Amino acid sequence: MSEYWEPNYHRGQQSNGVCVTFAPGFVWGEVTLASHTADVTGLQTKANERDVQQDALDVARLNRNANLKFMEDLCVRFPRKLEGDLAAADPLHAEIADLRDITPDTPDKITQRTRRTVSLWKRINALRAAQVPPVGAFQVGANVVADLETALNNQNTLMQGVENERGKLTQKSEALRALSTKVDVNNKRWFAAWEGEFPAGSPERAALSQIDTGSPTPLPDALEINTAVVQPPDRVVLTYVAGGGDHATSFKLKWKIETVDTDFVHEAVLNLVGQTVTIANAAGKTVSFIAVATNSTGSTNSAAKQVAMP
Image (cartoon, rainbow, N blue to C red; front, top):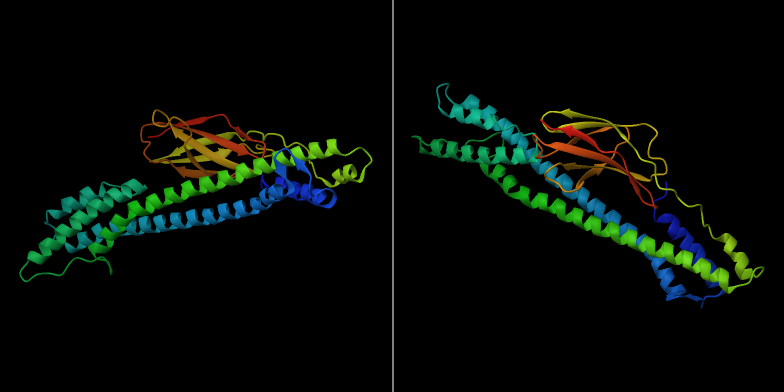
């Protein structure tokens, strides 16, 4: 399926082909054949820049997620290893219980548990070093506390990196959309000006038949959310009404946390067969979801579906 900008690109090529053949000096308003050709050609460049930036965002997400996974893994393995290492009456077993009270099931919880784990790990190392004779630093597999602390310190940078790349992607996407709109408008202006410039029956007027004006693209139909079911502690499973979203070229799922967000500021690519999303920092809140169907003409929102988070 074509992207929204591609019909404008192809029509621009057709328009420029007619213009260069019959009247390369033709000017419509402030637009010349040279400037319009540059804009039409620029659509491919802008699309490539957007796609390259999408790859950069994907890499940033992978790096962030891999670091989170490393921290989560060590935070789970550390208390298990320590529990077996301590004597049964050691008071540090209470510390392990406190650590396990933090369930590492969200990025914030993983980071919180990692901070506590690093602190406890360092205390364990200090106690071992004070023994007579001293005992070597505590390890989990091949990992020492410095490995976990480094990952913890890197996480903020990696998370910020994702947001930075996301911002750049928005910038690249909007640049492509703006240029596509400009080309579309100037394609239509050229057609009208050319049709008025040359009389019916002339070769110039006849050449307009090679321009694919297409039929107006209607706004997409709404894709309604069928069900939204909470999966504690922080996930929501969504399904969609089959057959919705006609004429759409892309779909997004958006949500907002009521009393926290002023608009639907969170989003994910929508999966028509259904999907599960994690809603961070929404315990005890109401979350509203909408499905957004989009094409080159515009977007259509579904009715909002609300869930109460536990």
